[in-house]
Image 1 (cartoon, rainbow, N blue to C red):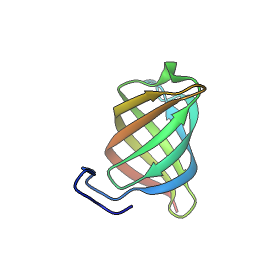
Image 2 (image 1 turned 90 degrees about the horizontal axis):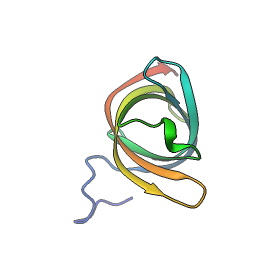
Image 3 (image 1 turned 60 degrees about the horizontal axis):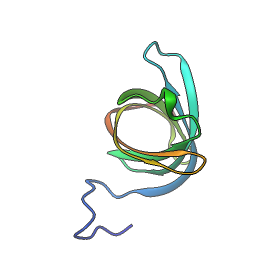
Length: 99
């Protein structure tokens, strides 16, 4: 995606069709979603059950070309759709846990 005047993102986003696993405050798996895009500063994903997503959370992203990343993130945008809720998140930290 080309950066333009309207795009205020700090890093370019790449389209993805990968899995994101969301963990609750106690560190237990809560829900998985479909990652739709990713950059070094944030991502977007959709989940069917939005009830478990908190403002700040931990997640694991499984990216085919990068490996498995563990992130701490916060929600910056939410959009409800017919069968899912779409989230935009900003990363507070990223750790590569598997090549």
